[in-house]
Image (tube, rainbow, N blue to C red; front, side, top):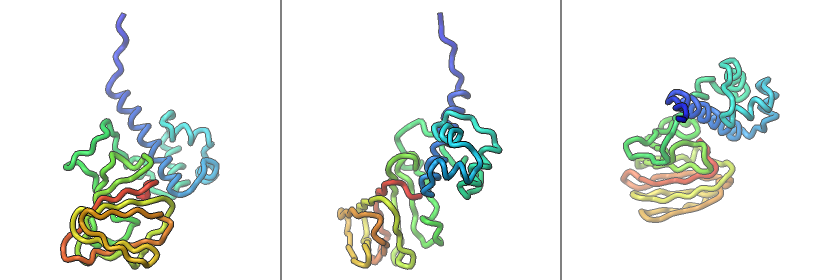
Length: 200
């Protein structure tokens, strides 16, 4: 006896529900909310939210609107997901990220090297133009970072102390330390940056 074939559509739906659930969980954690707090803010039960986050529920659109309201985001952001079937990210398929933290475009370009932002770490390909300087808006958040400069020069400031990195140099530090970056060279600086947990 042959088993009934599983349709591609049902597989795609399951992957989409899982991706949306992961997005909800990532956004909730990014905001430091517990299930109970998001439940209070959205009006949905903790059980429903947990099922959505685990991709085990097919929520009504009204439930997603309530979730978005509780997270303080447009509902469309919940669908800003890519269903990934491969752990590989090809060079010509890297996802361009918006400028970090919603800062004005300062010529820096960020590309995601991991398939998504749902894992334990975020890896980005960073290119900064000469003169790029983020000292006006120092970063400070939970987690840990690692950076490796591939070309150019990058000054990393940790609570005001400068560490100049040349090609091949790397650095690791706690993200709780106020930190900012300057491209003090005369060429584009290319680097790979690893952050855990993801902050984008």
